[in-house]
Length: 632
Ligand code: GCB
Image (cartoon, rainbow, N blue to C red; front, top):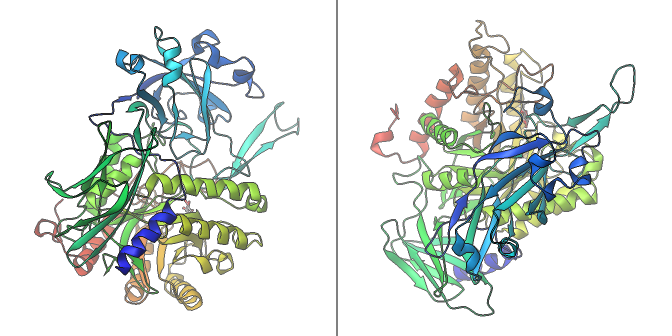
């Protein structure tokens, strides 16, 4: 009974968010039309980057107001052409696409037509047939607009969608940045300005995730929240379905197992579904049947149907352990980036599947979405494959004291709202990360992080919250409020470069200090070293594969001591090499990947593979075909 009361309480808290952002899915009542492919494109290279608005480029076809080029969607635009001014462009770019929809979408006034952008970086404004339908601030989360009535205004013509996207980062965006105007005429051309950023990845821009149109009936399922629990063999799915478009609606909720058999059902908009002989959702390598998903079908009689995948699992944190389904879980995983040749941050299925195959090959059971929310399509893969996720918001590079002001905080809170609303139902997401390495030693940071973390916990009391700190103990202003301490450190790299011998003593001190002060479990959320593939030296020197190996091995020795106590995970920095801004410490990007940017293994990948499979054998329950040494 207590358990059920708890489930009700947490669901009420989650429901502070009142509009939904369900992933678009086809069903017997919903159709979907992907707008991936070639769009028409122009960068606004006018001196103030504002000509597009001044001359209302959205009013007519883009090709009528100036030259245009082909641009694939989804993709970053930066690496698509040979033009360095487009690669490094700052300001508004314009995308356009005409679409013809099935006639029934228009003639049937009872059909809602929704335009959805999976993500566009950073600020976006959207017009349909010259009329503004929505705008959105933030580069990694979806936004939508209902456009049916606009399309019906002139049913004979195709629907013209115009999206203007601006990648400019300011002190109040997430991540923050500053625009610096260089006014010295001896050094810079007239009107010259640069974008300063305080994070270590290329500020790729454009429409990064699929744009699509989908339909729903007028009365439709707007949002679903599930919170799960279990006791012995019984699973509990506490759910809340919100319906829009009618004051009252008759609802039927059915939970189906993988074989399509109904295991529980209800006719209420909210309640608890009891699942006998429950099949829990388990992480990869922790169980012989990981990633088990039920399907929860919500039907608004007889109008709308939406099927949500549901994994039944629990997450808890003690002061020394991270528990999934009440069993200790050790994170042996990676940090990633959405990053690849040519596409930049554009969603790319071959890359996604390749990365999952590599993670499984490696024996990785988890990753952190450093340093922003990844595509929903990736989280769905995690749900299905049992890969555990630390879901990070784009709070990276918060280094300027002005970025701790009220406007920044308000936006950061909004972004957490949007992130939790989008990802709350993914069983793979086990923790929220509100920021990476902010300058948390600054005075305003204490209140900023207290507010941010408390807010996130109120949004979702079912998941722990962390914020990622570096090895500077003075930057611990968020630590009192988090559930898990995540520390990044680069001993023998940024500190004492070339001195591998300092790692054991410094890493040991790091763990002892953080645990001694806060008595919270610790994840080594980043560690590593750059290795230029093919560069060798013995004894090891910085930037060689041997040096990367030596750093990894040295860290692993200490992890092995501390994981018996309170260290609950290790995430390598980074899964693969990735592009950064140009600078004297980066040789065509960051080379701390254990895979190259083209996903080929460096020597370090084999060290990690050996280790992760050994850890999995020690801590998990492996199916016979994955026993180490594996042959995946
Ligand atoms: C860090 C950052 C990450 C960088 C990494 C590095 O601490 O969190 O974004 O890429 O170090 O390689 O410098």
